[in-house]
Image 1 (tube, rainbow, N blue to C red):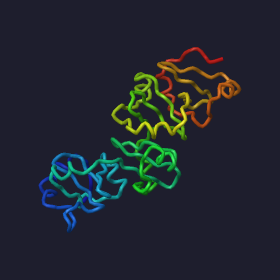
Image 2: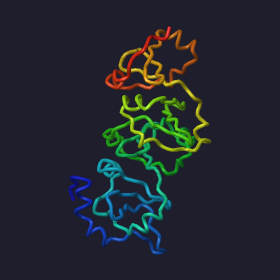
Image 3: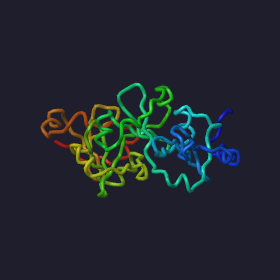
Image 4: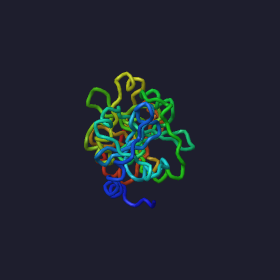
Amino acid sequence: MKTTNYKKYLLSTGTLLFLLCAVSVNGQIADGSVVKGSKDPVYLIEKGKAYWISGEKIFNLLGFDWKKVKKIPDSELNKIPKNWLIVKGTGNPVYLINYGTAFKVSDINTLINLGFDKSTVRAVREEKLKNIPQQPLLVKGAGAQVYLINNGKASWIQSEKIMKALSYDMKAVVRVGDESLNRFPKSQFLIRGSSQKIYLVEKDKRYWISSAELFNRLGYDWNAVLTVSDLQLEKIAEGAPVN
């Protein structure tokens, strides 16, 4: 069957899928089953948890077959704890998948420190992974502060205006335990575009750090600098340089 539109497919095959059952002989949903309830979302079932497959591109990334999607009663689906879908290509980064976007986690150790189980990481084809939109990983603990996790450091994004300038969506922020968040050293939020200029972002503005010597004297970490597009950078108002 040739896949066309994710939502159209789900709606048009609802009756057929309802006839299929994704349960094992002991009444539990079998590992590896791809299921849906009466609504659109599709889930992968593994180790007693449901992993949301957030769109057609993600479904194809995982190499699943539309004809094998099975419908189960909502009452059964609602009983299954939900979890994050995490994938890995051939490189070091792993990616948390949400809302059709791959949120980059720099390495397995960072994933573990965030409280995730490395055994749930699924291997995918690198060429398909490159077709998925990617963003840095944003997390929050019990408080309101949102942090960007980049190369083992947590940088506080201090305003909603900066979030919007960088096209980050609050609904994609991952909630983690405070204990997990506290494992990460805190860093200033440092960004750069395509040029060599590095900016400190505080509240609603970016401030150019005028020299490498100053950068080092201030104790900033070169590995914590996030590269963004020039368009994103220009959406952030520029303040006076840091001298």
